[in-house]
Amino acid sequence: MAAPFDPSAHPHRRWNPLTNSHVLCSPHRTQRPWQGAQEKGDGPQLPAFDDKCYLCPGNERATGGRNDQYDGTFVFENDYAALKPEAVEGDEASSHPLLRSTPARGRCYVLCFHPKHNLTIAQLTTAPYSARSSILPIVHAWRRLYLSIPQENPFVSYVQIFENKGSAMGCSNPHPHGQIWSLDYVPEEPRTELLNMQAYALDARNAAPDVLRGAPLDEQGRASLLLTYAHLELNTPGTPRVVAQNAHFVTVVPYWALWPFETMLLPYKRHISSLEDMTDEEQLALAELLGETACRLDNIFGCSFPYSMGIHQRPAPRGHKGADAELGDFAHFHIHFYPPLLRSATVRKFLVGFEMLGEPQRDLTAEQAAARIRDCDTTHYLAKSNA
Image (cartoon, rainbow, N blue to C red):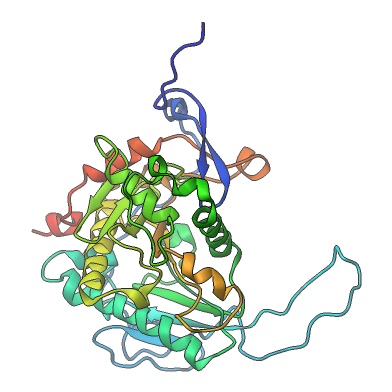
């Protein structure tokens, strides 16, 4: 006779409705010994200003440009952009259907979050800083760029906002900053999510009361995949995957999470398709929960927790015509945090072997990870050690 299923002990697969893919969960593997590679822990604390940093106020960058003497956020076009704005003709070199390429066009920007070289979003939550004074300006800059870039560059179809934090995630400069890539197409990850959110909204079966369970609908009266999911998490007994919430947003470890301490931040009260749709109150609430989430991650292992963080939202502002613009009405604003650390500040998860050749796999369950993050303080560990 088969034993009763225990998701905290037995291997199982979880489905990701955003990507229509699966992740293999193997919670029993957390007991295995580790003799593999280890990351470097935090080095000496950084100075508030580094005269050799290409991103500090007033400094000269590698290409000869000079930064403003900024005292808040600072934006400039990336000196080593992955995309160029010039239009080129298509590649006609090969007529074989297996050898196809399409020109890609866009503009890339760097957004410095703060003038101080040694502060991260996680640290901007603790006095003398606050989400209102130090993180809200970042949200305002994101919103301004999201609106202005497509207006100034009509060929742009998608604005991808993201941050790579820490050398473990390939960040080449420790100064607090993120990037904005604008493209003339909708990239694979957000496009896949948009298509699945559209399919969910248009599938009559998903409008059944027993599935929606009272979740709010979008402006068209349709079921929203992520709004329904947020409502489901907040109404699950014990809220085992909820990390934190405020009046407008909630942070969860998604049921289908791949990375050990992966989190997703999203609005739960109403359908919000992009930064454009947020009220002033909602923008402040976003800044507050963004900072709290980053701070909790740092406090898991008492280190500057590396991650890739990015926003998925409506491809371009309302009324802008671009590739897949019709999918915009199905978008529900959300932020992904993909942190790689697994067991300690020096042991990370690698996506190799079975994960490259078979399918994604994780050891820690989403519920276990959420409990670890939820138990962390909201005062940054460095503020405590310096007190």
